[in-house]
Length: 377
Image (cartoon, rainbow, N blue to C red; front, side):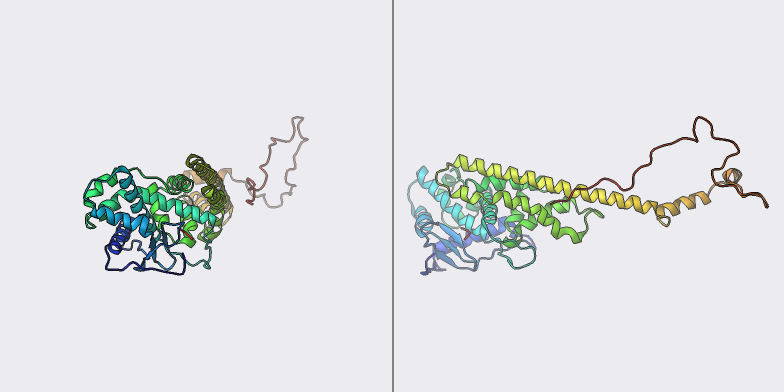
């Protein structure tokens, strides 16, 4: 934007329409339930003066909207006394898409970028955020239109607008995030819609951690498996393949020489690489903890003072009288007084030609060896 900031008057119809969309998005994103997420909108609606943008969500909580491409079209449709053409209806749907998308961005707080485990809002984070916000918008746009059109005086054009198809504003980001959210859902026991909503409303600085926490809590947080003190390090190992795979998508999205299908293919491929890397790390980490825990349990069972050994001694002490007598008769007897001591293993005759008894292999010490793991618009 330029330095000339123009605010839409709060008493205007346009302002009330934007406010209605912001409120509807908050409700649809879970803000209607106790403790649910809340919009960070500061109550200001600005004219979008950047010619490259039709709308934007600002760090201070303001929302900026193109007057000509968004607000004017909606106001003109309100006053129209004839049916909309298909082109007009599509442009109205696109205008509502813009309002909904920017209002959805305001459901996430920026977070403290200097906090422990915070991640910057870089190219990978932008792809992860924009793709998800667009995905949520497409999934909820019809409901937002129904929520606000009647009170805004747009009920007569509602059916025509709802009949129009939608087009993803981010041809590469959207399919990538769609595949990733589905993968996280499958590994966390949630639905894809739940994952999308949780991550859309997560702080920008912690969104990666929130995503992998969903899988950690499902796969690694069972009692006694992963120590909670290890969570920060495990997060890093799981986040790394996600960020690496998405880091190049911004260049793909901006490449005007690529068609939408080519961008979608690149986004899908990036997601598949991210999922493969995620599974490799998740399986390796889980396997390591399970093997380590099994080895500790075995070592504990072999200790003289362990509960397993104590239980064995207690069981022997509770033998029936007949078995106790039999055990006493078969137990090694102490030598009689004055008897000559013989070295252990000494015999009264030479070893037979068959050898000195059965021989076998002894298990080596230790166990399996483990390898070491190496402005938003």
